[in-house]
Image (cartoon, rainbow, N blue to C red; front, side, top):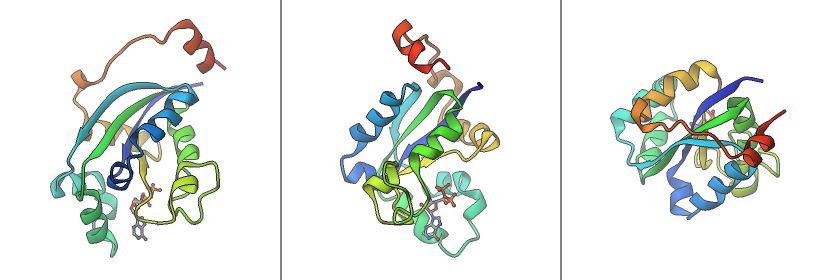
Length: 153
Ligand code: IDP
């Protein structure tokens, strides 16, 4: 059961819709640890770095406008299988196709404005976390016994 870290962003639509608390609660209620947390304004340069695989795609200009349109909340979420479990909790890219019970399925109907980003695998997490966080912005701490038991297999 690998302990993993993944990069999560609450995208500008989540901030505009005042869903920071609701989305954060889902992650905490699941039992994951928040290792890093900040609000920041994504610049076009940062957007191109983050979404480098999409920069040449036709939808990229819209994606850049969207992701730079308001601040984002960036988190490093840590715990067992955090990368894949967060992807499951997020749901499919398109909110109209995302299952009910997922974040995108419960809160949105858009393919672009889909509220949340999560690294899509270990390589992506390794690349993305340092784009948003310096080492000294990540906290190492132990969860209480009760919280640790919730996270245990
Ligand atoms: P993911 O966020 O579910 O991993 P990706 O394919 O990596 O999806 O796309 C990154 C982001 O780009 C999506 O979350 C969404 O905001 C946006 N996006 C992806 N495909 C489209 C599209 O076809 N039109 C507009 N925006 C898109």
